[in-house]
Length: 404
Image (cartoon, rainbow, N blue to C red):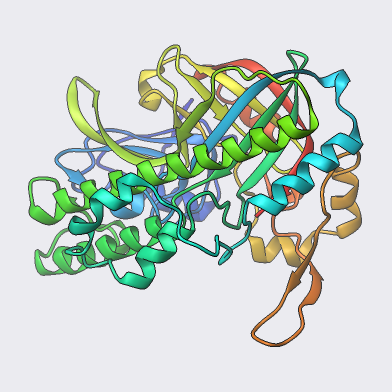
């Protein structure tokens, strides 16, 4: 861990586990360290990179306040993983391909892709009366939330079959709260901006506007954020059930170990620095002592099942993945397809070609390198930088992958 020392004076220190920090992400960390509601040092995980308002891979604690953009628009985005009893030596590429094809038929993938019919979930049904009074609610959005249950989404979301260093096949997926979380985050961030302007709040930038937790709107954000967290967790559990079913149809008989299902975009009240504070983990994983966690790498690289060590200066947190080193736009413009194909050699997947269509126009094929391995930091360097935060339990390597 390093303490960031800049010419710029900050209210609180910045603790960093990063090998290098891009200038924009560092400025965002400085903004946080000067924020009036921040109640302790800013912690930067080794996968830290520029986000919206707050760097992804950042952890902060606030006194009596929440910052919507310190949670982000994909509230509850996180990981699910489960170990099977199938030996890595007992599964073939043909079987992997068959499993992947079955999953593709049952789980909608990509932005805007959802089930044709609404999916029932009793939590949404019970919350409907409260939702109708929320400013982010409308009937189309609510139906979309129902149809998005059990769907992957796009961007860096994925489903993988993995080879474990323990000798067993693992199943892993990465997804969040889909459009529901986005609507909640956007609505309350806009309110926070308006209120902070009205109060003449001394916030470093509008993107870090906050809501006091003892106000009606602060409590409403916490309530609706928790709904999105439950939605994201349930979404992952529904997809994992489908993935397990597809796996069992090809590999018989199968038994599964305990499933891990965790968030890495959320706020919660926890005790740190001897106080009950509102911790915000944006692209960071809880790593309390003895707690199981999941740290995925880039597509085609290693991922890890870890155990937290409860490091107090990181607020018992660790990285949520490898972390980007270039934007999706830059990756698509600069990475070479041949090198990316070579990085994915031996892995069952569908390649970088994507079909895009609009309206009645036929889809156009193009190569989408935005999520190629070269767009991310080296996961093993990231893991080496946080040896004081977590202990590796199982190393996983990709055998087959589906991208959103």
